Image 1 (cartoon, rainbow, N blue to C red):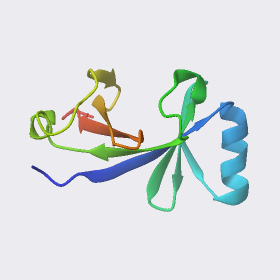
Image 2 (cartoon, rainbow, N blue to C red):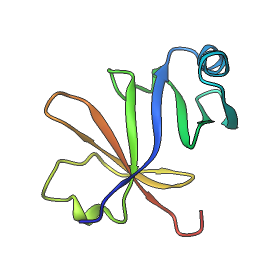
Image 3 (cartoon, helix red, strand yellow):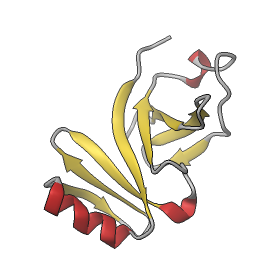
Length: 111
């Protein structure tokens, strides 16, 4: 099994504009991408994803997104959600015993 690397940390917020206004005041940031449902800012060397809570990613508010080489390494070891395609590749989620979600991402080679 390959060792995953942190791609970004996703934070769910009720309102994207409010989440974006918080990040420069407290964290300092460089906006990488901005849309009504998903925005990404760079904080230090890490991408910080601000995601609309209405999409219901994680009831705890935060979810790490880990880049992996292939999902096959995890099949049979943990229960994975159905694949979901995003611009960077394909994601699936796992839920730990306490209900926390971790997003796994296999990046598309041409991304």
